[in-house]
Length: 252
Length: 252
Image (cartoon, rainbow over all chains, first blue to last red; front, side, top):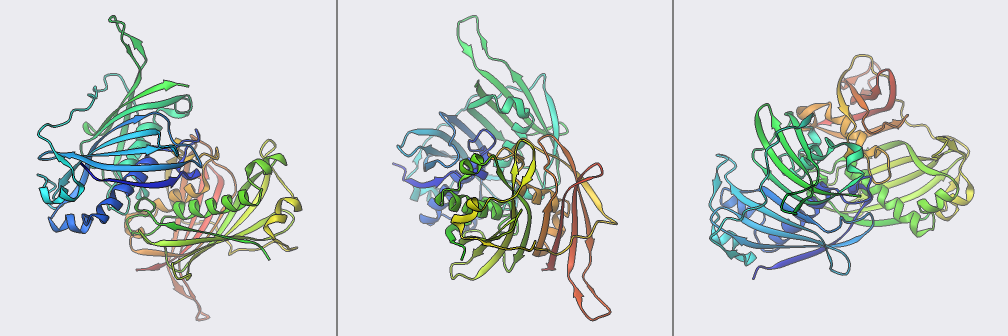
């Protein structure tokens, strides 16, 4: 049974957007900090991982939103490194309200990379052991991300303050590029319910990226099933895709 | 004697840049949060101020840096609404290390504005009374900000996530535009020692601003006095200046 680690956090005004709810970069920042604290406590901090000639990277997130945390709210942040297979570690995060009700669930897929060769390494059992993660055979599949066929885009330059103290573009930053392109009217009249995002390549300081988006309206299929309003996203430099995502929304 | 309010804060990795030290938006975010907490405690929260048909604006900061807070450091954040005159309130913030040594001192000049008319109001004594601020006659002067005569600039679009839960562009955000234009090499080889910044007009969502900068190398005057390396900054839209700043630096 994987060890759970839990902290509390008061949502600050500067972590929230105009909707008075927490932004994705803020939620992911707080979540990842919790996992760093757990890792340090279990003697698996970045120095120990560097001792294996490796560093963690995050390859994807799958996020389910019941309700976004609000300005001034006291939340609990829990995390558990639940499972791993040969190449991937599956870590879960929960943002909970004061009563312990789930607000947001985040599944993060971590991998280990050799920072010199940029090659992904298999996961040494002894790195994972203290977390009590279950070893599994299968590779988890998340909802597929359809390619954009009819989109629009805006350019963004990667700025100095998009790089964090971990020396690379904080992948929480991608959310700002992904969402900004939807514009004020969309972002103040819709609430996100689900996100699947995959990071394919790392963008670097100074890069000029294009954030592409396609809006697929909600629809009822011939089968009677309904599809929610979805937005498809791609971060590209020229024809190369660096990041893909699909967001599901409700209108408010 | 003005009432002091103090909290503690652990510096998170996502509050720091590649230099492993806290960014200006993060420091100002934490500082302003402290003043909001003090105001709430003294029954002078935003609802009470709105009851007077007013809202706080910040017109300038003067910042002295002994040493920037580092990733993982436990700091203390103290604030005191020290003085006020007819139109301005002078609030001080101190970021201190665990031993209470001053790391950063921030003087912030607040004013009260009618959000409908956008006109600055005189400061009602009863708003300030619970803070124990001293009433003064004079208007404080900060180092003057020379105009740019020989600069360069980069354009920045005001993005959705530059607006915070207070419904306007968080003025801590201006620091990212001001500094990004200096570039990676400058920002990783210099440490800031002093900042004077003045906010003249509010930028709005969707604006395309130009961040202008001029670098004045350190020099020894004929008098034997030395001037530090300084950078002059202006945020402009076409010919209109929205924000001006001067930063003093040491080379590291």
